[in-house]
Image (cartoon, rainbow, N blue to C red; front, side, top):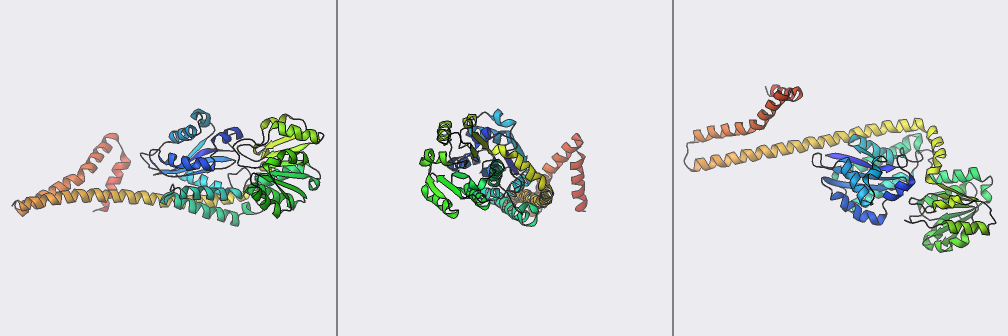
Length: 420
């Protein structure tokens, strides 16, 4: 059996490419069954966030898929050439795949080192796959151990202290640009977890005028009420944008909802007073052409790298401690996995030998029933069993001798000595 982890993330692919292969919740309903239909794939989980799209699967060791086949499936599902993904993807197997998953869930592979949101996103992806009957015994144990180590990393190392997120990076960027951020008017487009976290950070630094626009007014009211903000619908954006000094967008829309024309109109009403727009969504909520406008300053998640790098420098020691913990957990899981392989081989061997013995026993019974002397039947039974049990080992030994395969010969010698 093989554990695969294949995908792209913020370090290997641009936001444009990540947008093309992101999975919406609706797509996952069809994608997981389609992935499991691939030859040899037993279990599968798809993690798709703003910064990564990854496939985790348990496959047959011999007849299972290769990394090229999985990459081809991912590209084919989204209708893009596999060559487009080839140089921007990664594929890990077994221990490396397990280590990667645990690093991801622990926040060590995030855009901002140690950000806490990714653990919840991995849990959500796992639960969705489990509800779709795409998780079996192997991935069940792997993800449970992953959640366990991620919790330990957060509680036992400095990575879990004062954890930051993409939301905090956005607020930090706004604070560097606006000298008096407390007096700025902020419009949050979207009312999901990221928007709520942004609102929390903004409130903590003293922002007083907060507007929340969402597709459903009820959800906007839920977030706005927590931070004394105003709730609106997306249909009110033409009226809200001229009032906003800062726009931070993080919806799950598959198409941009804020276009160049909308911002151009807002700037005219603001009499060219500058606007800061931060787009945290993948796919993007704000058209890239907005950056062509004077007095409109647009940043995407990829533009937060400076803040992220500073964060990473401050947490290198904690990350090293966390990695040591993950390595230990990975080794424990691999030991368990190898034990399963041993059990499978032993079970198959026992079933094979028992089948041979039953066939020869039935033959002997038939001979006795036909009146053949018992001594002759027993002698023939012993001879046939010996010949059948030794046939495969004898052939293997001969082939090993001809090829100079001394490792195989040594294993047989050890087995022979142990039986003396």
